[in-house]
Image 1 (cartoon, rainbow, N blue to C red):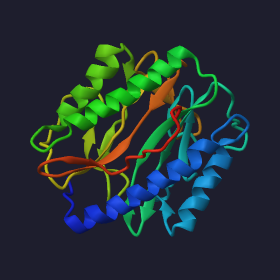
Image 2 (image 1 turned 90 degrees about the vertical axis):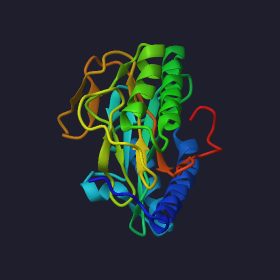
Image 3 (image 1 turned 180 degrees about the vertical axis):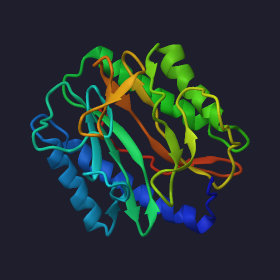
Amino acid sequence: MIRLKNEKEIDGIRKSCHALADLFRFVVPKVKPGISTLEIDNLCRKFCKDIGGKPAWAREDFPGVACISVNNEVIHGIPSKKRIIQDGDIVSLDIGIDLNGYISDSTHTVMVGNVKPEIRRLVQATRESLAAGIQACVAGNRIRDISIAVNDVAYGKYGYGVVYDYCGHGVGLDVHEDPSIPNCPQSGANPRIQPGMVLAIEPMINLGTADVETAKDGWTVLTRDGKWSCHEEHTVAVFADHTEVLTACDGLPDWA
């Protein structure tokens, strides 16, 4: 069931999203060679505690505050003291905050140091596909319009693999709500986009095949061919006359 949010609920979600944008501004500059993914996670944990919030992922029993996925890890990477960030890595930080019961969700992929040109192109393509998906997310359109817009950029323009096993979703009062928002056109439900919807649009784009597999830890999703992947995400709220990017995060470094 799709839960349309009222003005009070959207305002609460907006505050959570703005806090999440502040978290990214705080933590992204610290993602440098030599830091462990567990150290990054601890920084996020402290930030959430300091603002009186909680990690949104705790609702889903994920063993960390942030999903931190590196290189060929698509999503749901578990923070670890053994995973040390290296020069040339790309690191996706998928974070949500539960602030007074209102949930935010966003992902940014950080390019660390001397990232190869072909990987920078992948990151650029993923950001472009997210922007296209958001542009298509307007009242009166349908969910599949978002999927088509993302796929037209990532696959149609760049020829990359668009992950089909995982997708965007409703958000705001829980971490994952209806509707599902595939990143490529699929059969099935195709609801009309309505005012009051709060949606997490999140392209997951692979350098090679779109196929993925789950690691032995039961959480981390990997590209099946071992090639690298990029993930970007924003939470948006739909109004009758516009769509607001609630997690907009101006001020991040150019490489984030």
